Image (spheres, rainbow over the protein chains, first blue to last red):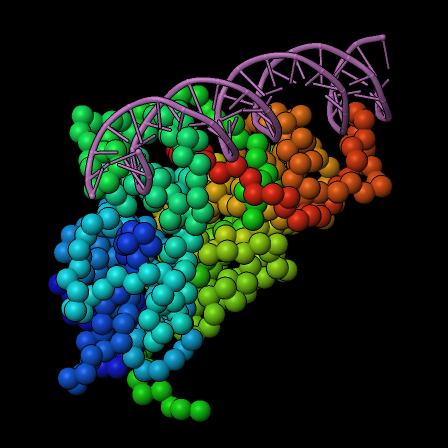
Length: 231
Length: 231
DNA sequence: GAAATAGTGTCTCTTAGACACTATTTC
DNA sequence: GAAATAGTGTCTAAGAGACACTATTTC
């Protein structure tokens, strides 16, 4: 083990790794925030879960640790959003933040009143720093964009789910309603899910059959010349 | 101006900003590399254009400067790819690289024999460091994925172009051929280009009409339930 | 029974891809 | 004329959206 030559006392931390954990909460897209530990007895401000990065550690591993610290488990999806440079602001914190998107299946309950809580992406606490707000928006945009490239909708659901729940996730991410019959027809054609011999009754109405994510090999290359989608 | 309290002599640089400049070169997707200035008389190894970042400077601005340094102009598109952490390797360089994708219109000639050259993305120099190779692949993947979200194909062409050239860009980025009639029909429907009263003869064959990028407002929301595209 | 939710059958209209052409240039 | 490239008209099949239904539950 080599001795370090220089150990500056007040050197700025290299950078921060922050994680935007998203989960469907009460038919909204929820973002998990935690209170920064305040020095005095008063409670700190809300913030994205984050930590200062030790040089040399793998970025994704670091993001995993941040996520573990708040949900006590692994997110079902973890992907880098990008690097965000804050204005060279006050003393605390580093100027550079590497942000990650983490998905959490529906139904993960956070005990209320604690230092961790879900906020709707459209109703973030007013004191949330501008940079973190920007990161949250980038995370939501990324989740939206990933949807038709990776099966991330299933990462926001429990292993078994009803087709209505799945459709609700799509509508949540796309921000608009979807035609039910078309949705199921396309789902059928894509061979992404398979029904299991179980039904769930949600109070009133006919019980829904449960499905599980079970992608089969794609048939043939799909149509590709599409200029819509631009914007 | 405040005096800095600590100026560690051998502190690692905060991070590096690298730019992957892509351009169509001889019907391939070209990546611009430059030689690292070698200490002795011998020529250095090929590398992505990059620089060490001064803290506090805006990331994108820094990427702009890197690009200017090699093409002596602005790329037609510039977007962050992400942060890449190298193995904590040898002494030189920082562990963290923020990479950017830059697009350069076809026809930018780099004088051969110099310290800057286009390489096909499939034929990168063998000595290119693994991390940089990874960044190039991420850049290509990003360009591919952005294609149907933003009109980046036009950023790889001169302001006026033929439809065959445009189609070639699409085929280059998608890595597969496109049906000519379908391509033009979809282009027509999307109202993305307009013909100008000019033709270009390319040697043999009928001269092609020139077009310019002139997007009109989208008509109506397009169809959206699509589970293909996954994978 | 009404209300609520799950799930399906069928029709229409759009459109991607295939095919086969016509048009205009160089040689 | 042949060869090469540009550009178009038409047919077909896939599939997205609309509509109207049937099915099964709670109240």
